[in-house]
Amino acid sequence: MLRDALPKVITPLPGPKAQAIIDRRAKAMPNAIRCGYPCVIARGEGAMFEDVDGNVFLDWIGGVGVLNIGYSNPELIEAVKTQSEKYFHAMMNITTHERYIELAEKMNSIVPVKGDTKKTMFVNSGAEADENAVKIARSYTGRPNVIVFSGAFHGRTMLTMTMTAKKAYAVGMGPFPDGIYRTEFPNMYRKPAGMTDEQAVAYYAGKIEELFIEASPAQYVAAIVFEPVQGEGGFVPAPIEWVKAVRAICDKYGIMMITDEVQTGFGRTGRMFASEYYKEAGCAPDIMTSAKSIAGGLPISAVTARTEIIDAVTPGTIGGTYCGNPVACASALKLIEIMERDDYPAKARKIADTCMKRFNAWKEKYDVIGDVRGLGAMMGVEFVTDKNSKKPNADIVNAIVNEAVQQGLLLESAGTYGNVIRFLCPLCVTDAQLEIGLDIYEKTIEKCLK
Image 1: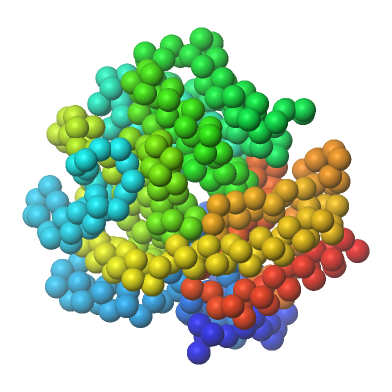
Image 2: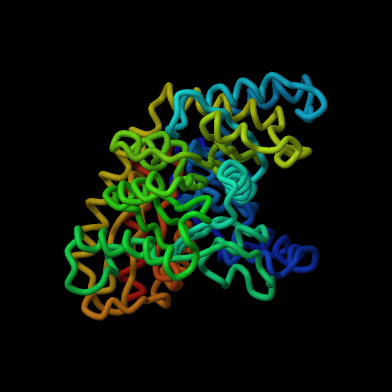
């Protein structure tokens, strides 16, 4: 079966069938929707997919975090088929459908936001979830401004492009909305020289207080929004002591703390949600967004908050035509059932243990690996020209990504400077697949160094 297969490349890439489809893509699609990988999927199972030329690939990108449960899970397929045979669509503003309510009830029971009673709304993408979280925070607080961070990625709508730090994602798209202010995210690998971790946490928390003086007074700030592990920013985890400091700042000034779990959610970090770590430490968020792996690949996303916050919103200002589609809700309900039953967070922790041992060994062995970090199975390896300078080394990352795919392993870069290789492999990956992926990865590093 494909789900148990190992990587196998039998044609030069792209193969002839793939090349023909890629040529059609160039004529039919905008060039701005880029793809640098020389393969065209024909079918996928587990952590593997086969392309149209019969090449078999191990996917360590997983749809950029969408496929935590893997390709083509049979139980999800059955849930989708069952719902699709009843009805495809029912808009909640017109006809109530029970799948939306069931999924909202489930999310309210598992999402670790502050409050005894919670409510959840559904939209269609991570960017929509983040944008609606901001709308809800503004409506509840009556304040206009939002604080975001260096390295952040929140989406490609007009508001979330503004919230996103890397402006390569926003070239030529201005002018941008007002009210978004940015300060430094705590990147402990690149903290100011000579600081201990404790001093660095205080330094980065202090930057938020400085923002209140230099950019927006605290009484005008509706929300502070951050990713528990930055995705596009380079897989940089937020230190728990810094999160505690942010929580304290939010409590002091009446600001909503929003965790963007679009990429970190649904088992990836060793918990169902990374915000569970925060709840355990007494610093749970007020609002949490989720998407990506929520339905195993169908488009749906969520915003969850305590009842008093979400019910402060003026009727008619949130929602939309496709929000909470019943087929996507059915898939999400089944996915959560499977993840809880089969303990996917434990799978993430086991994968992390295996990978981190290898990654940290490479860090000692290769001068081009500056840092290894992550939370659960959301891990990043940062490449530098040398350990002393810590100068970002995007060239070797590009070379590794391009060579690895020729060996049947899909890797993807991340980071402000494109010098990090991310790990988002489906959590259903087999032990044999994980080991051969690590072997290909290391051989590729060595080849690119030569």
